[in-house]
Image (tube, rainbow over all chains, first blue to last red; front, side):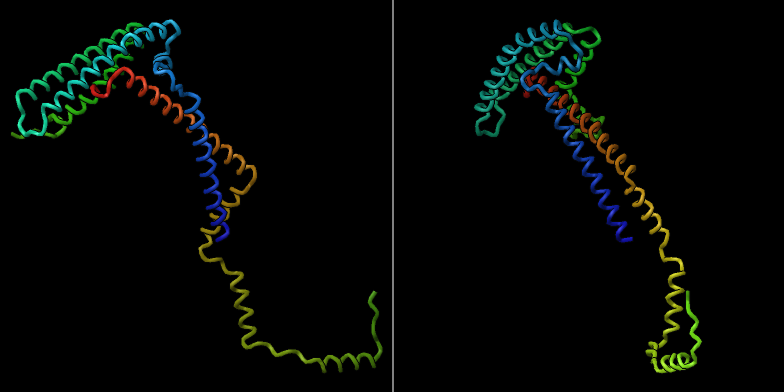
Length: 163
Length: 108
């Protein structure tokens, strides 16, 4: 009985090792084969089954959008710096701080609108069905975080603000 | 062929030799112990079902054809699942890279 038990445990351990080894080797190999770290747009091609002509048009749009995006990011970063200075070490919410907050929110909204406009333009460069899917996916990925946060703070999820 | 020994002198000698040979004394309760061992050997083994099940399983696992098939199935299963998982990870990484390139972190 003892011998059988040892053999069984050994066989199970060997089986688990074979399975785990095959799993990890295949996983690493597939990851290395599928990944193309140099191209940010590789995901679009595979996920939305795009051809060369569509990819060329999207690449053009992408490269045109990036400087605008970076410019907005720089403006937001600068406004954050101003807000930080205005906040200083005081404990009161001054009029200046409120102005800076409003300006920062305005810049963020502007950046977000620009981003959504870019998504819409890119979606139009795709076949209609893929374009709709792309737009929905991008809205979910970029606005989903805010929605989750807002939903978690609303009464729907059981969390309520008390006066 | 076995030869018949009909010499009366030899018969006497044989009888004398047998009589002079001293047999060692049996240990105490020898007969009782012998019967007990016979009964133990014939009695069904305790927890016999577990042993039978385990032994049968081990015997099956150690059968070469079954062992090779199991190893092949485990390797195939591991490769398929690993490849699927790797493809998913690569897809998520590529998606995250694209989203990071178009949507600044401050907006997400």
